[in-house]
Amino acid sequence: MFEPSEDSDYYYEAVRADVEEWLDNNEEKCLHMTKEQIEEEVMNSDEITGNMTGSYFCNSGEARDCVLSDLPTVAFAYGEFCDAERFLQDVRDGAWETLDVIARCCMAPYAFYEVFSEREEANEEYSDEYEANENDEEDEDNE
Figure (cartoon, rainbow, N blue to C red):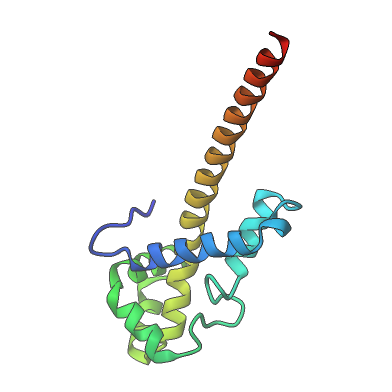
């Protein structure tokens, strides 16, 4: 399991922010979807991973800067999805956008589950608080 560290958290934090933004922007759509359907949308969203087009930035220089700023996470992602040989070949070839997308795709499920769980917990707390307030109001009305 991936644990972001102070030395290698760019991708996790960037993808997490994109997941939060995507969920905020698609709140109405998500109401009619299962958790698994939402996760699939997140994984295939160019706004989060770049997975559909093969590029998040559509700019090799920006992708290179991100990859070089968080090589531990990129290496971890290749270990999850590919292998060391492919990682080294993509680095040699300067396939920065591919390296970037693979890292984003690897971080997306971790970020999604954390954000989704936090929102579920917040909704449960809100529901519990709302019910308690409703019960208090009913008690006051009955007095």
